[in-house]
Image 1 (cartoon, helix red, strand yellow):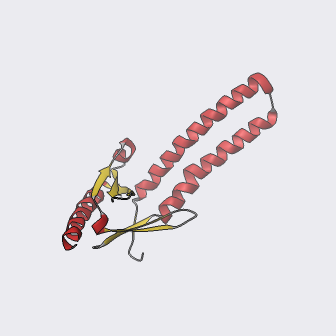
Image 2: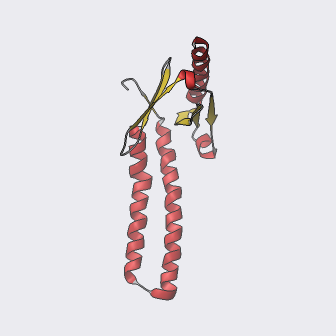
Image 3: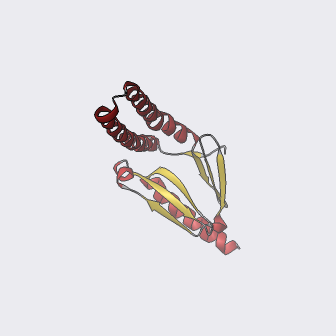
Length: 157
């Protein structure tokens, strides 16, 4: 993928927010375990273990994983296919032929809306592919372009 597009930089912030939400859940569970430890066991090493786990999860889910995901995500829409490339440990490259595209949707939840981002879902008969975190205008333009290219590809068959 030489001229591949990268996701919006604002998507990195959204992935960090998702990591923060995951970390908040871990902190809640850890707090519950600390309270149980205070009431019943009073094992000093458990405090250290829970704090270490919570800090490690926070670092990984708020800083490391979003950076890796954002750096590895690429996409390109061509006349006859859509190429997606992503993955952290295992790089996954997917080619979706335009003749297989059945419909294209955009999605925008409250967090994406706050950052003026949208995700595109490309449906084929077999599965659905997603390009996350595109600027709203870019997502709408790409949805229109893919729809037109998919129609032209179907007419050629």
